[in-house]
Image (tube, rainbow, N blue to C red):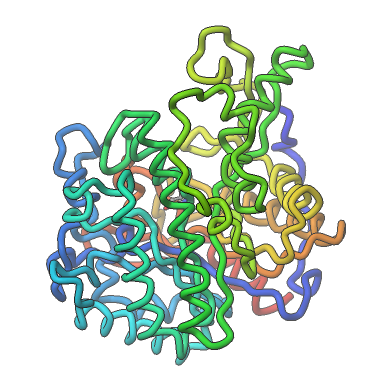
Length: 452
Ligand code: IFM
C-alpha cells in the first residue's frame, strides 16, 4: 500500500508547534444549525435542492441538522473542553437577507450571541461569510451566474462586518469556491443543481470577484481585520510517468488549483486552460482581475485528498480524467488518505505563490462510526489526525508559515449530497436524540491539546 497504512502513527506533541499556533475545529451553518424557519430566515438554495427527489443520498435535508441554532451553548462548551483556542463557523446569509435589503436584525442577533459565546469560552471566532447557503430569492434572480449577486454579497458582508467586527477579527470570504461553482453548476451534485460548465466558470469568476470586493470592505469595517479565503486544493499526481499523463495532470491542476491560485496571486487565469476553454471562458470586465488580486492576510487551505490523473483523449474538457489507484488507503468516502499531500500543498503555497500566512481551515476524515457501550472507537480517524498533524509539522520544518489548524469537524453533520450518511465529526451526533458523544479521536485531540 502506497501510503504506508500499517506503520505506527508518528509521535507528536503540541509543543512541536509554535506557541501562538491556533488550534480549532470547523463547522458551517447549513450543516449544523437546523431551525431553517426560525428568526426570519429565508429559504436557501440548499432547502430547495434537498426537496428535489434524488438530490440527497438519504433523502434528508438540513432542516434539523444538529439543532445547533438552539444547542449552540453546549456545542461551544464541547469546543472549549477540547482545549481549542479558535472556532471556525459560517454565517447563514439567508438569516440576514430580506427582500428590501435591510439586514434581518434577528439573524444578526443570533450571530452576535454566538460570537459572545465563543469569546466567553476563550475561542477566537473565525467567521466564514459564504459556505454555500445562498438565499433562494437571489438564486431566483440568477444566483452567482449574474453580477448582481456580487453586489448583494458585498452589501451582506458590509452589514455583518459592521455588526460583528468589534469582536470578530478573522474573516473568510468564501469556503471552497470550486464547490460553489463546479458542484453547484457543472456536475450539479450540489445546490442549485445546474449542469452547465460555461455557467460554472462564470460563477467562479463572480465568486472570486466578490472575494476581491469584500476584502477592503472588511478592512474598512473591522479594526485590525485579518481577511482571507478558504480554498479546497488537491495535489495532482499523474497516473504514469508518460509525457501524456504528466501533461494531463498539469492541465487538471490548471483547473482544480491554478484556476483559483493564479488570479488570487495577480497572475490572471492560467493561459493554458483559457486556451482549452475557448468560448467557454468567463466574461471578465476591465479591472476585475485587479480586484481579485487584492492582497489578503492569510490563505485558508482545506485539504482532504490528492487526485491521480490520466490522459484520456476525448475526455471533455481537458482530455484528462481522474483515476482511482487501487493500492492506496481510503476513508469510508473513498477519499485517498495521503498526509504527505498536505505537506506538498503547504510547501507549494509558500514557494510557488509566496503566501505569507496559511491556516489549514479544514482537514478531516469520514468513517462509518458505531457507538459501542457508550463509546466510538474511531481509531482510523485518530490515525488520520495524527498523521496529518505530523505532515503539517513537516511543512513548518521546511519554513512554511502555517499558523493554525482547524479539524473538520466539531460535530457529525449534514454532509451535503450525502445527507447524514457520512460522519466527519470528532463528536458523534445521534440525529434522533441530538445526543453528543466525544469520539476517541476527539479525546485524543483533547489530550494532545491539554497535555502534550
Ligand atoms: O463537509 C464539507 C465541508 O462543508 C466543506 N469541505 C469538505 C467537507 C467534507 O466533505
